[in-house]
Length: 332
Image (tube, rainbow, N blue to C red; front, side, top):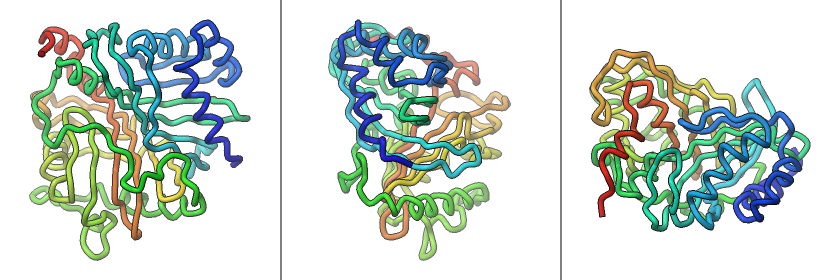
């Protein structure tokens, strides 16, 4: 694929900075007429430049004033999945002062870092499709209205890669090998020991995870260090609640340099058989929208950034996290 990564990234940055009156023209120039955008709940599906403007760009700009885009990862590549296409993927933060409501979340009038996982399909240099998971639960937390119990892991700003080379990586030829490592890990995830929550080929001499792995999770879960931290602070609680979960239904898998990114909309199907993050088991069949971003090193996965659409997941459980957050009131 032609290297349009820098040009597309510049367009995305400009959506926050150009004068509001110029936005319709910018979107018309850089999105296909039938561009399809799928955003985390409750925004969900938008079609065409007009809906993207009114449903996402303007609300974001008006809520997070003087917002700027701060990319930690921005990669691109040919999609390995059967649907094909040239895709770009990013972990970013929208940084600014949270001064007006957004999707019903009351503002804090303070600085926020609204994190986001994003995938874009490019046709002829234009954005034909987008999938975006904004961590609205973390925005509630930053505004003092956290609707979930204390984090299992450590709450922290999503850091950039330890190597500081995740934006437009240079050694692009290593991308397929990076994705190979991730796909080997994915192939071993479904079988696990219900007592230890171990899966073959994940750790040890032949494992896909580096012994010093770092896992950065969404609000409600938090981040953790090494496999034992990952099991304690995420895997055990998740598999106990959803022991029959099946994943891997991905529309996109790409590799670029030492990085890989995968996503499914939804990726997982599962049954809510145990309590999870304060939500009692419902027995309901659920789906989960997922985005994973990986950095590989020494033939293993070293860092993993994870975006999950928890507003959509909890809505399926019958829990409105936005309403719960608003009912709490803001804490100082």
